[in-house]
Each structure stands twice: as C-alpha cells, then as structure tokens.
Length: 127
Image 1 (cartoon, rainbow, N blue to C red):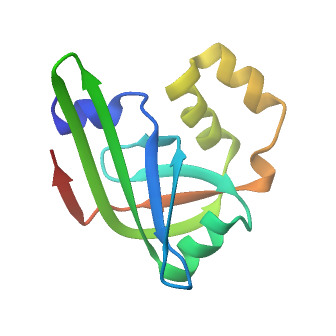
Image 2 (tube, rainbow, N blue to C red):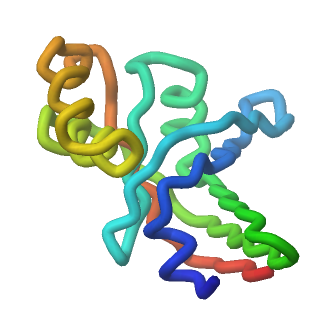
C-alpha cells in the first residue's frame, strides 16, 4: 500500500505531542488527510489541545497490516489549533463511519466543545 492509499484509509492514528515536562504523550485519534495536512478533532482545553499549542509541533503515525504486508507512515511537523466547524467534524466522522451515521452523530452537537488541530507534515518516515 503506498503512502497516499494508507493516508486515505479509515485507520486510527497515534498522535504524539511533547508535554511541558519533556515527556511524550501518545494517544489514538481519528484524522482526515486532505492531501496537504492532517485534520484532527480534540476537546478544547484537553491535554492534547494545550500541549499541541504549547509545543507547536506533533507527530502522527498510521499503520495497517494486510496479510503479510505491513504498511506504516509517520509524519512530523507544526500543528495549529482553531475552532472545529460542524462541516469538518462531519467530514472526519464520514471518513470512519459513513455519511448517514456521521450526520446522526454530528447533528446532536458536540463540535462546539472541540477544536481542530491541523498538522502540516515536514518530515515523513515511510515503512
């Protein structure tokens, strides 16, 4: 599987960010790849949000195994935070759960308490 196919697949990513104490925080997270940047949704004022803003950088790693084939990619770069729109949250949910289920979930609200993190890859590490 090439990098673009991997990035377009609905796989869970490991999102890693440097904490203020110098340790690394890594956690699973849904994402949407637009061909230039990763779009991620996190709770406003959560550790992931605060630490991403304070460090200004993050790393994302995505992996899949198909039979005997292992594919993964790691990307690192600057990350910015801003409001999460209804439309962006819907796109992320559609990527993982399909349009009908996504609309049911997102129409109930919740994006108001979240922010969008955008990671712009500068360094790629392929398998």
